[in-house]
Amino acid sequence: MTAGTSTEKASGTAARTARAAIRFAGAVFALGLAACASAPPSSQGDNRSGAVGVRSIDKQVLDAERLQLAANETFQMPLAEAGNAAPAYPDELLAQRLAPQTVCLNLAIGADGAVAGSRPVERAEGCPAPATVDPRFFAAARRAVAQWRFDPAFRCVYPGAKPVDEQGCVSGREEPVAVSLAFRFVFEQRDGRGLVRIGG
Image (spheres, rainbow, N blue to C red):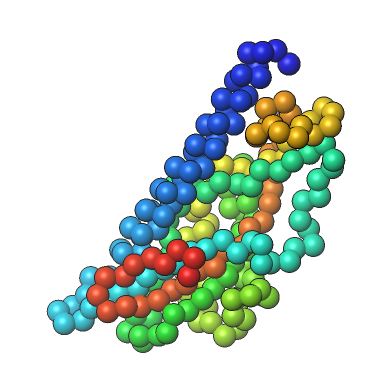
């Protein structure tokens, strides 16, 4: 590897790290905007609105198919794009004034960063059984995540031993991989303006 190539890869790694921070901040902002706009305009004297909080719960979900790494490999998780919009609270359920409703989804994220599909999480801490939640909440969440995009996950394969102090994949080879991530969505109603609870 030439010095120029190494420098370019280091710059690319730093850029990815910077994008991660920017995307996280942008995603929080975008989710806030989406949640505030999730309910239809209220009639006079009716201040119902819906808010949606989103949290990644991947570490709480046991997955037998998790990626296995060799001794000379590392793994970079996918990064959510800043423009990923939160689900909208189902309009037809606003009048019911329901307690907060939680749904959890497993997202299949392809090597191209697109969401290939989603399915309910059957068992995880903080995730109610899908059968106990109105299916319209799941439908709203699945419609939203179908449009999500990610900077793809990748496996970094080194030609020899994995460097101890290397940040990113500077001296290795990036191999994009498909992965699955789990997310929790909290749909809730409040009098007045709806706000997003990140990590709810």
